Image (tube, rainbow, N blue to C red; front, side, top):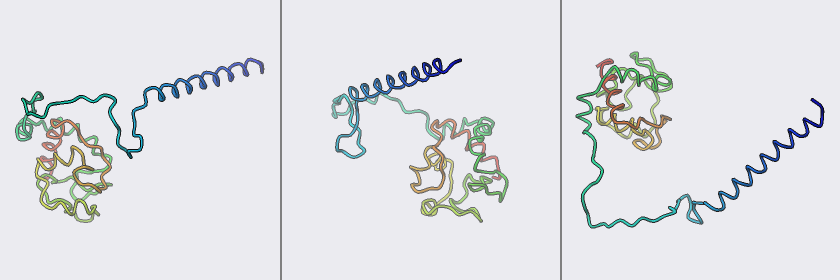
Length: 172
């Protein structure tokens, strides 16, 4: 391959990049949805008015947490625990990046000896009952703002119930 061919290839790549950037710029200009002097608030492109006169609920709520726990599968929870293994251990007294989860179900919140919990968890008080543990696992940062737990959460209630059923078999 000679110098002229290399120059053509580099020129084609630069040209393609330039065209991509121009299309991106044009698309953002035409379809921009964002805040215009309103901080981080994003405004919707279309406003759909809804009457506030009440009415029937269209979306049905799923089963209650108690029903989910009654049908929870600890074996599925053991598989789901793989998300937790990076930071938590299940052996008694073995803290990792996070506290040990040995006996966590119904244990007092922020009570593991030798682990430095965030102030937000100390302020919660009470115990990790299954329902409360489920709320925390759904979104730790919302449940305890300021927590050191950098986990996005488990969105499916069924998965949380399975995990809690598994954790209830360890040290309880």
